[in-house]
Image 1 (tube, helix red, strand yellow):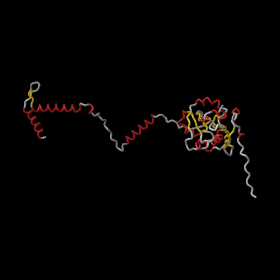
Image 2 (cartoon, one colour; image 1 turned 60 degrees about the vertical axis):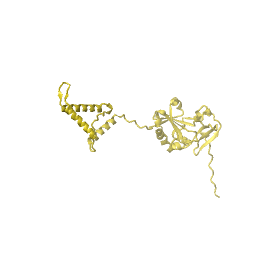
Image 3 (spheres, helix red, strand yellow; image 1 turned 135 degrees about the vertical axis):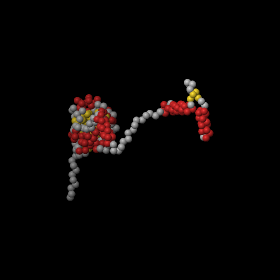
Image 4 (tube, one colour; image 1 turned 45 degrees about the vertical axis):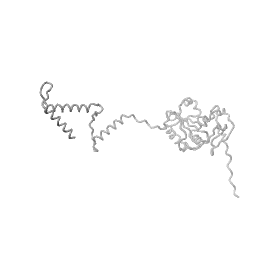
Length: 283
């Protein structure tokens, strides 16, 4: 280190001793020469340090430091929040079931084309609500109280014993909800299963749970049972049944193939439960 300092001092001294002539023939003093050298060296070093563009740092805007008690900042933020809220569209109204209308069996032909062309979305028994856990036969007897006879039954099928298992439907109820939403409620797997299937126009797929809750789940628990009788065809057994509720108990009676030309089974085909047993006499 001492040696390097000595060499640098020697060179500076040598520059101070040797006269120098400028480009125009004038003699330069040692101090002027040293000044020019320092200026040139500074320019070279500065050019070297800033030459690569990747080493340049972009200028930063001045940063404002806020105080906890800065009420102006809070006012500006609140103003901006209100401006953003006002630019948003109005919120969509919540979907609710305001009313329903059952399509009767006699009116079904007028609505069949619209219902047949509907693209359906379905929901089955996927909760622990009474609608999903109650026996299908029990639900059918309560539907009879609330809505009357089904819109469609197996009796309206031209050849039900040639259908696939998933096509054999004991009953269907057709509804118009809110005057325009087409909805169908049908049995899952005959009278021996639980729950029902609810189908609605696929445009209301995201509203199925609301329709089920506000429509069926509000009505079913409080409804009384009403006697009914239906035909049902068991594909696995290839057997026909008369199934229903007689006012006291549910029944399933195996029968011969019914004559579908006669339509739905008559209520007088409900099995007679027989006279009540006489009480034991005490002697």
